[in-house]
Length: 136
Image (cartoon, rainbow, N blue to C red):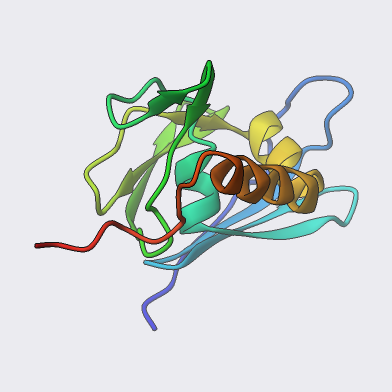
């Protein structure tokens, strides 16, 4: 598997967030991030896509909730550094407008199981699926 790895050495983030020490893109499946407190997170492409910090036209508003469905098999095509504070990911559904700051990636990593569980519950509540719709 082709692995793009980049070590980040001198990035300062918010005072209460550990400093990023490693960012590794493992296309198309996941991103690996490590912080100076020793926390290491593998964040799947689907998870990053559904929690992208950008407003996207493919988000459905269901019952007042913003819901992205059908992204189970989305992939990450590339990552572009943004200054010294984040990265823009390009997904294979052509979504590329979200900038993931190091602080936000830490939040996504440290709260991964709760956020994913809540996401699955929301999909179920609205009769939606993680799987893409079938083509007719």
